[in-house]
Length: 377
Image 1 (spheres, rainbow, N blue to C red):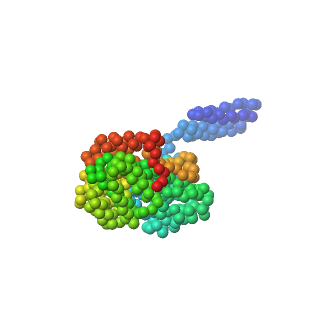
Image 2 (cartoon, helix red, strand yellow):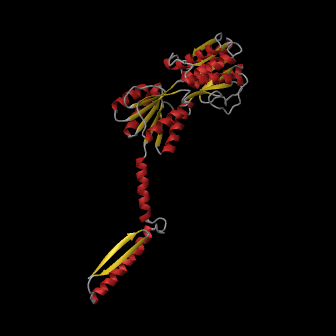
Image 3 (cartoon, rainbow, N blue to C red):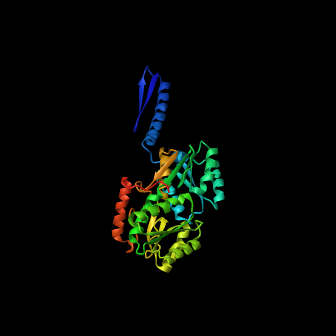
């Protein structure tokens, strides 16, 4: 009789044959055959354990890769971004889409943007995202509030987020901005720069949400120029450039040399009026100074891209929590070109570096808490 032991120690495989009794002739033949088989197995196993040189496309090596890829794909978090309108109409939603997708790429999440043809389609799109089992469903703005309240309440085990407004439900994260802080800086700059002591603002609608713009701007204006007159008119829509232009021309006729645009798509009408009549203006959400640097001299910024990015990031990393998250000057969620954020456009002389420096000092006071801007108006 004989005993055979097989030892595997990468990258070697050893075979030990131990004689236990006198081996008969027939057993010798058997042992030779067994030894040959074990030697062949050892060579093959050693090649595999060392990584081998199997040709590309070999089923035995490709299959585990396919399975790993499938497992990795299955482990990805799936995020749906439900936009209240089509991408490209308003840069506010355009940069939100960009921020969410950037986070998806960086943190390995699958992000899909779903555009709504009109506000009535928001609820339907939310329900589609629920039915398709997205792990996180994000939407935005007051237009989506009612739809989200309904869908989130019906699906308490699903995670939701809404950007730029508040929905008070235990499974919803609400991301808001302290726009009044940036508006305060805009008003302060206008008060320092105006030559006529008349400053205007064309606003989309007379609603509580937009009081943060008008109220913050007026407070900032008074802080640097108590004698300045503030003119404000409401378009009645977020998508009416013609009406916005008409109102801007009206304010210009009353002597306003700086008219702040806060009318969403309507700002394009304000910009047209500024170019025709030669007054100065500012845009919202993204840097608009690149459009017409001669007349668009400032922009009030809102980081909807950062809000979407951080929301997706926190969800993938496991720190996502319901409740209200707030971004202001301190968190760099809002700002003003040249004051808090750089611009590719050279600074217009109407504003000038002296004004920028003074407004920067005001911004630092707000961040430090030594200058207070009301939370609401």
